[in-house]
Amino acid sequence: MSKPLIQLKNIVKEFDGQLVLKGVSLDIEENEFVTLLGPSGCGKTTILRIIGGFLDASEGELLFNGEEISSVPPYKRNVNTVFQKYALFPHLNVYDNVAFGLKIKKEPKDIIEQKVLRMLKLVGLEDYGRRRVTEMSGGQQQRVAIARALVNEPAVLLLDEPLGALDLKLRKEMQHELKKIQQEVGITFVYVTHDQEEALTMSDKIVVMRGGEIQQIGTPTDIYNEPINAYVANFIGESNIIDGVMTADYRVMFGDKHFDCVDFGFRPNEVVDVVIRPEDLDIVPQEIGKLRGTVKSVLFKGVHYETVVETKAGTSITVKMHVSEPTPATNDAAHEKISANDFYLDMDDISELDDAKIIARADAQAWNTETDELVSISSVKYEIRHENGTYPVTFSTAQDTSITVNMVVAEENRVVNMAYEEEIYAVNFFKTTDDIKESIALETDLKTWANASAWTLDGAAVNITDVVYRFDAEKIRPGTYNVTFKTQGYEFVVDTTDCYKVGDIVGLNFAPEDIHIMSKG
Image (tube, rainbow, N blue to C red):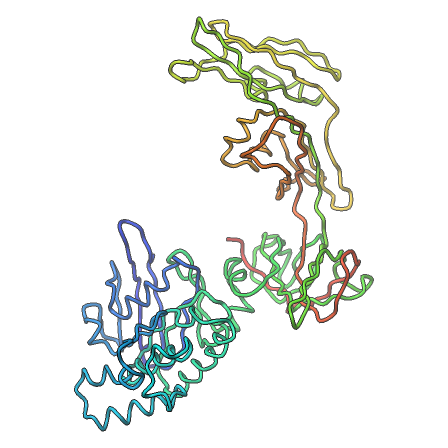
């Protein structure tokens, strides 16, 4: 078996103490169109520059036809590069730009002419040889750059987002042209892009990258139909990804129902990600659908409608957040201040109360006004009965700096959803404007302040995935605000040629082979 044309073995690249490539290994075969795909900063251009010789790897090996070339300078490597900005010589015409490398090599004039004219014909510019490159469109300049690189007959052509500066229509045209050129000249293309459509359109092999590591390598079909994880599934096209449980080989549960699938080899009852592509879902009458849902939105996309169907709304609860200006009590003699908020309790909380829990619920704290250091709260005084009402509680320091707030005992705030067999709990709460403005993770803090939690009717914890509020945290003013906590709902994006109306009750159908199962993480 022949060796790969290019081999990267455990390539590590570090810039100023930061790892940009984290042990990348990759084989590139002769005559392959390989695309390095990923977001900005994932390391794909760094790989290209290491192959081209413009960067040295911090660790690892780079082999070309089985020989280590890390120490070989760029001009001695059988590799040429096409950059996003083309790097053409503005003072030269098209012919001289393409011929430049051959002239440097001092090839005979007649050979140069033969090669240049052949390349200009290949890229569809045979009548533009005497045209100045500054008078040409972006697409034409890109063709000149490709011809200039190919005329040197490299074994590998490196392309660093060469279509990035083109408009959408021209970019799509050039995708097909590039693939055609690669097939005609029969050399290896290594192409860098963040555009998944480009990768799917042109590539023989796609290398999906994230954070300096390779996530998956495969053909466009493999990457699209069999993504290895949720990151790849989301990056390559639109995906519906929902939580599921692999109950047995070829059997998965999601949306509170069991379905046949084609996947196997998972642990019994393993929690998994379930992927169904929008084009693999069919909207049908509700009575024959495997899932039933409500049309939430419809967006016309030119050749199809992108229809969002909600099959589970989730369980929600809304509480009141009472916001006031901070009004700490001051003890000038002791150079102390103390603050606390009113707070809510339900009846079940009373038996579990202690000083520490009351201090936490009231967010009580004291501090030295000269040093800003916190001061211990030494005393918590209150009287409470097992009945609804408002009860004062006083917090004091050892220096008798004190503040009194109210703890309000009210009916338990709980919502039970029998349809989804889950319930959710939260309490009304009091906060100051400073509490809201100074929060660095507001949604998390809102859940904590409201003591929000959810669980199934058999006691298993359920995540609260959505926190809904309508106020600007940076500009909040005293008042009462609604905050809604909601468990996971399920929405499916469906591509359909039929137009449905928002609010329609519909069914969703899919086949076992349309379901793809991925391990979590």
